Length: 280
Image: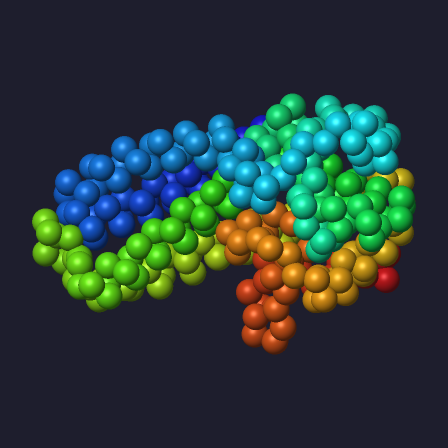
């Protein structure tokens, strides 16, 4: 991993620690902060070493062998040879919505997951373009940062939900004089926004980079461009059962928004991605 990526990973883990300790302070004062610090240390360890397994389990991804998915393995075999990458573990998500993501902590411990719908709706060149894009995330070493961000967002969502219930019942922490229900409610509102900002900060620029690198791995941009156009249309018709915490990991946003919602999308507009791919 590059020094830059080590720095980014450290910042994300520090943010996770800060959020958990802040919640501990609200709920339990100084004692709560000590407990939260220990919990944060465990979560940081888990986020670094097991975030890929956590994300795959969240989506009920199933590993597939060459005998089970010969077409997928054949395409991946050709692309990793071109990209100079170790072959990642391959998984299929039992969902009709076409989409894909990559996860892992480095190229030697990487996985690519595709939905059953992606395998059904893409021709070989389009599927090759999608897989090349995901391999580009592995080659560009985006996957650890992306997986940790998903773990952080999931933890923040859980903590914010707890805080909302605490605010409803007027609990602010026995040992914390500042732990009013209003402060707890404020944290419940601010924390998910902070998680979204983290996702936005790491997602948009890396998608453009992965598109460009993926086109080079595939040998041309046309399969990926056609796949993106098809994925953009199908995402509006076939919903993907996923969490906002992991939406930034997919090749196209599974929770499509319009108007103001599009401004807060973790992905850049598909039309702009296609335009850049084709050099228009």
